[in-house]
Length: 103
Image 1 (cartoon, one colour):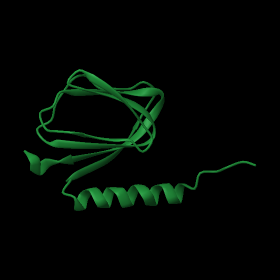
Image 2: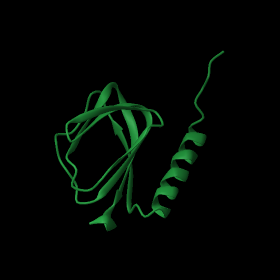
Image 3: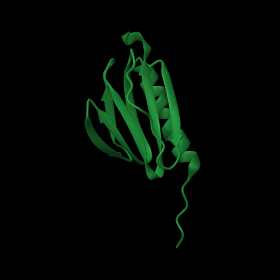
Image 4: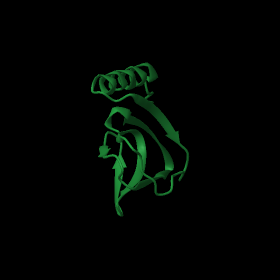
């Protein structure tokens, strides 16, 4: 038996989560598709950031401590916190939500 992902349900769940985050005060909500082993260098933001992994795995390093996040894992990064990320070899799809009002 072949199982097929119902993309309509996935997209509806993503839309619901995005709407929920906006109601919680997150101004900018983006769905990212990181390709194989893509990542960022150490940086910080002047706003709070929330990350929810939708599919795949991503390493998030915060103040020198690295955590591996998998599907459905989430993390909160307070403003002015030094961090960087690196997607796994399969890549990663995740939501970032930025609370611009937390300046």
